Image (cartoon, rainbow, N blue to C red; front, side):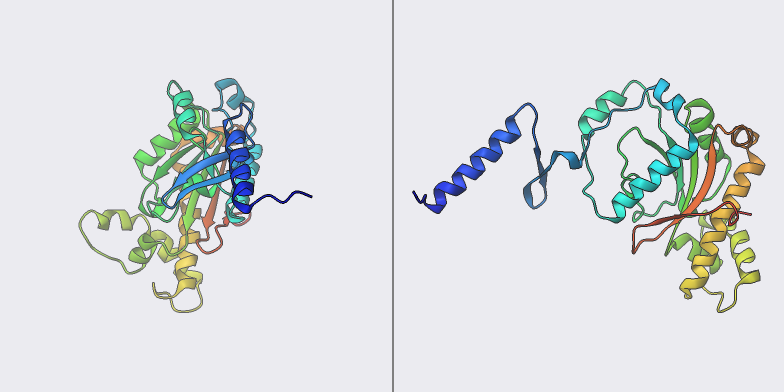
Length: 260
């Protein structure tokens, strides 16, 4: 048996891999990051096309929610999220037909598209500290659903929210004061049934206020937006709420009973 020198074997492997990457049907993809170049399985790249208007119209709200649950599971399991971003940007340039709209907090630790393993053109994302409801947010959500056809509205809170803690402490500072005033009803409501120290240094109470804030936001959507309320009643959209766990990456979607 002929024995080849180790350098020659390494050269052969590298050359074979490079040929694979240059083929018309590559099995691997080279990705550059701040530590250099790595090679990943092509199946781990999000290559789905941007939805068309016709495809979006066929979607059912429950199916969209299930897809987002599945995407979040991928995120929790640390499946690599690599997107054909440049191609998707070009395809989405002349129109967008996202599946859902997410109302999220401003927090930089809540990367909404990544959390749901989604790419460009899949989600509308409205961001504001404390995921509060105001007229501008309502208009944005109505646009997303009534005009652009999104099938799901998700109000997304998260752990360790600075806005929630500031509302608990009743912080007064510039325009932040008016914003926190919209979270204060959740503080008052949570405090009424909470057993323990109702202070911002108690993680359990912060979590209780966060949950209550999401629930009150959903009630506000239904009471202040006849458009969204009607669409939900007709089954054209679903309105749901959830909280993002920063430690596990899991989004816990509230049940209908929890939202009552």
